[in-house]
Amino acid sequence: MATCTTPVLVVGAGPTGLTAALTLARNNVPVRIIEKEPQHRRGQRGVGIQPRTFEVFHFLRVPEIHERATFVPLLQEHNRGSLEPLNTFPMAPYTEPTPAIPYVRAVTFRPWSFLYNCKLMGQPVLEEIMREHLAQLGCTVELGSRLVSFTQDEKCVRVKVGKHRDDGDEEEVEGDIEVAYLIGADGAKGITRKQLGLTFLGTTREDNFMVIGDIRLEANGLDRGHWHFFSPMSQDMIALRPTDELGKDGWQFMMRGRPIDLQGLARDEEALVNCIKGFVGLGDDIKVKEVMWVSDFRPNMRMVNKFGVGRIFVAGDAAHVHSIAGAQGLNSSVQDAFNIAWKMALVYKGLSPASLLDTYTAERLPVIAEMLGFTTEMHKLMFNESDAEHTPRSSADDKHNSKTVESQFERAMRRGGKLYMLGVNYRTSPIVIDEFVSPPTPRGTAVNSTYGDTQEGVLRAGDRAPDAPGLVATVSLNRVCAKISSGSQSNGVTASSRMFDIFGSTHHSVIIFAPTLTVPAVKSILATLGQSFPKELVRRVVVLPGPASEPDDHVETSSEVDQAIDTEVLIDEAGHAYRGYVAEPQEVKAVVVRPDGVVGAIVRGGTGLERYFEGVFGRAGGMH
Image 1 (cartoon, helix red, strand yellow):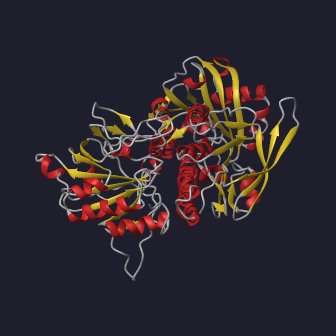
Image 2 (image 1 turned 135 degrees about the vertical axis):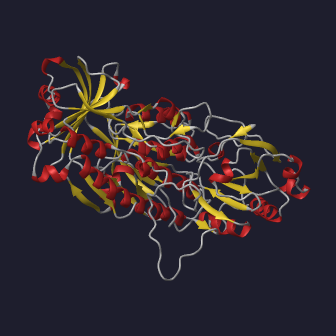
Image 3 (image 1 turned 90 degrees about the horizontal axis):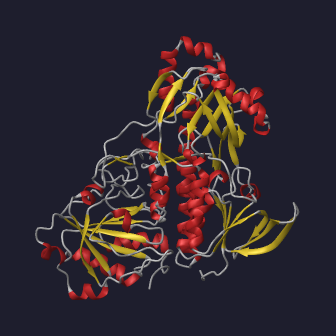
């Protein structure tokens, strides 16, 4: 495919669209991102960010999101009208730290010692951080611009964009703009999915009416150290979460109740304030000082049948919607965008065939289908649907059955395990290769869970690539020192590094585990890479077992390899890399990590690498 010069158009400037645009911009792909709203969005909305998503932001070099996000406060349950706690507990159980999982809560001075957990950040803050990084790369969000219509052929997409005029409500239509590709991140009500004709099958919970919003509130005795839930297992409930992002008296609220009681509150501030007071039950002891943002909705559980047609793709809420239970929405949306954008960058630049884009649906559809299933079950538990459908609960019932309610609520709100998304995998992807896994027997094929839990001592192609700190640089063969700029990612390894600092959204990384550099298989792998792929496209790192008691033996190499290959050589001093990647000190194992931090291949030598990269780059793409 010839190299394009027309931009990629991203429709929608929420977390999904911003992730797609930033990934493309990091890869030097021209991109336009439009947003139909005349101002940047308000509202905390979905605030939970899972560890796997923090890894995406790390690979995109956006550290501020993890740095500024806050930990989930302890949950506290109350009866209606009382601040006396019935139960206080953490949403997620604490888990022992491992070096492989870094984006979690630090509890000691060791850099890898963490308790992994979800953290919280309102979407306005997250989006502002991402827009700042995008602006550094020369791309800004075009506000007041909506997608009107589009057509496509085998060469491009032609779009019409409507722009609000500054002098009124009239709109000017910018017609027949040619773009190379279109990514629809315009939400469940957006035009992209509808005009593509994709199905959006599923259900709507008509009886689960919810109102969420941001307020400034004062209440005597309501502390800001907990996430408060009043009558959480009754039909009418309210939750109040303190957030300093809105001010020292800022709170995010969520109310659930009968549609007849809550409808219209989003448009009637006085009725909303009275309803909040009524749900909390504290009378004049609670004062709502300002309603900053409010929205209402019924939970939907729906997904598309495929994630794109031709040159047009959907991601995030434009492709799937589900219950708020589990905090998977923003996270799965960001991971959608990351998946399609790194692949689109390669195709756009003529380095990969267009067929690579088909793997977006092949990889993400099973993940979303499984996620939709278990979040729906969590929704039923969280909203007590079995009881509410037949025997609705009242606040009076709660007071007489607090012990029962306590166990139900804690069970409904417990988080952890697969919700961290560390076990989300693409093992069944058509482009992953694993030479260390035996093929399935004819008698039957094991069903793969795309939303599994991580298992120590198990790593397969398609899994999340683990981190490994304590990698010590010993030598670099013909290393070209890269100058760090705001739009580029460094290829230099410091005296002590970690695996996650090797990975990045702009390149594949080939990690070669070997006892020494002189092993014939290592020479073959390095020669294959040197002859076929530029270092900017495929970064290569040899990891030798540690401790390095005899460093001269580790780094011995031939002059011909030294002349041909730009390779970094690291010592795994603490053994975290060898354990995490299930490598033996005396064997040779090459692990290919994709730009999205997923293991693309686990192979024994150059032949396996050629097979994998042929699937990504085609027979000639990406090669010298």
